[in-house]
Image (cartoon, rainbow over the protein chains, first blue to last red):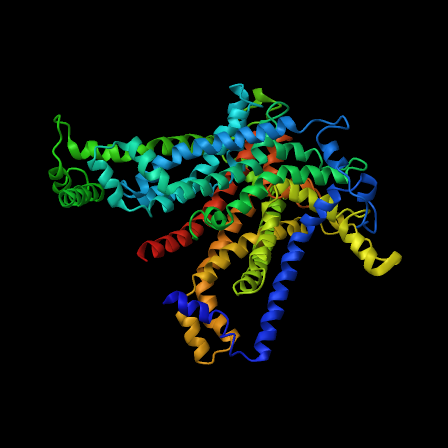
Length: 293
Length: 334
């Protein structure tokens, strides 16, 4: 019933609408397209520039139809003798993937205790998790730096794994809580009566149903860890350098390097673009900390 | 057989529910199942319920709350890392210095300006885009995907894109387009030096508008359709529908977008660090604190500034949490 009214209503009835309304709708659709193109244009321009030679990339007015080449990408991957990005990409991958796995291992049981079999005052606990996310990272940076320095953890990727886990844990608990709350309790009770214990219930009953939610949560945690720069910049140096820190090497311009910058930015953003488009529908939910579905 | 199973299922179900909801030791909880080995059953069961929560809670408290306490402690010391022997208790002197240092005070104002501008502009743009997308037209999914793209660039990469590819006065796209349009005599402004804060703000607005659009679009799509339809039938104009139905409904989502945007953008470090390196009056608080401790080695001072940022964030966060919790409760009711 609701769907029926929805289809009929959203724009005022199309078939009976006068020409003026139809023309207005077409114009607004066109406007939306223009806005979309305007927003995506810098990204497309970056992609095009990354495929030009350095000489063609830095012309004014810009050369649209210059011949395409992969030199920018070859340069970025170290063909020209610059520092190789492979180590920082591997570091980013380690930090993001391992911290995401840690987040899930901690968040899944916690979300269970906040939704399926809730502890007392579970909303208070949930909001405590959220409140830690609102404190600025920079305020805790110095003690973490001093701790790392004194315990020999500076320039160690595992320190970043721990920090990224704590950074994403609140978001993950919120998202998982809202996903788990949708699982029918009767199902879990039935498993309990069959004598299943908690680990069994989590892996055999809860996890399969919550899988899409778990996937979305992982993608969001992955994106945030992959993007993070302040911790990485302060706490890593040569060995544990991550991809965004590698990018900061391009901040001061150095002769003709535009194609290389574009190639680097695109390659390093690629995992986030892929994860983001894959989780498009869940993106809002993750970013709004589960407040918007 | 199935009958008894469902029966006992619901039976224990209510049992656990009461034990979770009532204080330990209350009759409802302890009568449902008697403990096998004499241990106080309700208390034990409460701990069993809490157990899955504890690893996450303990981990989070250690990693996020302890450093804050340490920051608070360091903030009352006069401590420069270059002169470690001269470390001494300073009371609230660091706070006095932070509040009277013109540079730090300026970074407070910069932070506020940057945050307010970016949040408001991206909120308005995000709302216009959400309204455009909340209708059926050809290629709607494609347009949505295009609009999200800026948000999915690594923040440092997006800042590099604006700094080198768009703003560069010699070969950047902006001046290139001006050259295209106006020919050889075209104005070729130096974008970043001429409007440093505006340059940072523009890049952030570009990245954050999609975020606002997504939140507001979710809001628009949860709008009660029957009210809108009734208004159409009563001959309301598009503006009246927007003003009296859509906008009131969106209010909570606008607040949520504004507050979350504020929480994220107050903390922004990447754009300021990349586009201007904190120069030309664009240093915001995170950048200034980073510089005070990383380059200035003024540990006490940086911590005092950090504590002040935390206090400011708590004020914003209180409002943010209130909005989140009202949306949360509304959803729990429905």
